[in-house]
Image (cartoon, rainbow, N blue to C red; front, side, top):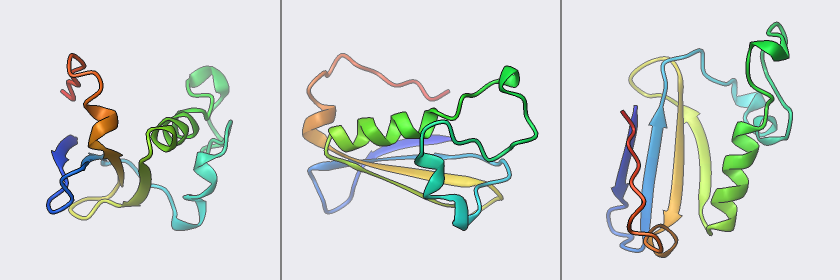
Length: 102
């Protein structure tokens, strides 16, 4: 599930939250998942998908936009919650861009 909303009280930031119901990421591994080519499931072959670049790319894009990214446990279910805090000015530069999270 994905949500995007202005952050209450901040006015100049947008909060984007993505929550999944997968196995989550152990707290001890949350820093290293941002390293390039890191995959936590060593049992999967590279041919089965994923090179371990996704979160590294997201973190760099968010950093360049002046935002932040945090990983936490999903509150209502097992899984992971990813929160992106992005400056509204970076988001509003291209008002034609639309994100469809469905």
